[in-house]
Image 1 (cartoon, rainbow, N blue to C red):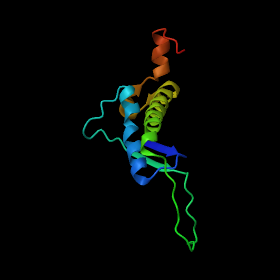
Image 2 (image 1 turned 120 degrees about the vertical axis):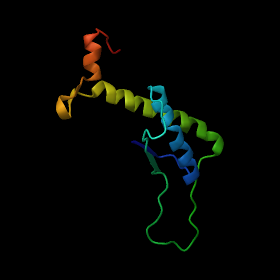
Image 3 (image 1 turned 135 degrees about the vertical axis):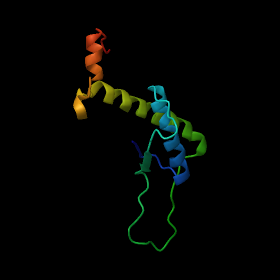
Image 4 (image 1 turned 180 degrees about the horizontal axis):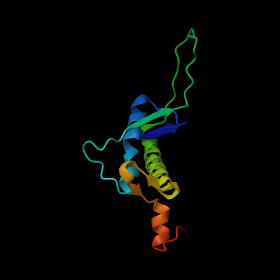
Length: 117
């Protein structure tokens, strides 16, 4: 599951476009994103404050220009990539049902004398 949170003033359409780019970060870390692989992405922006009590005037919702979206696309891909790599490096050894075990990534790196820089 990927949760995309931003403080960019974006419209619903722009947020959907940003959310779709988040799986780029999964691709960069080796995911092949196949049919049924189950990626779920949700996102929201905290930029716009909508008043609880209805004002007497029209509410204006500012948004960034479409041409300024490229930086947000790049940022979300890099953020997801970093989150995946961070979770790999900080994960611990797991023991599962029926005696199944999976070593931690960091343990495998130590076993093969690979240092993370």
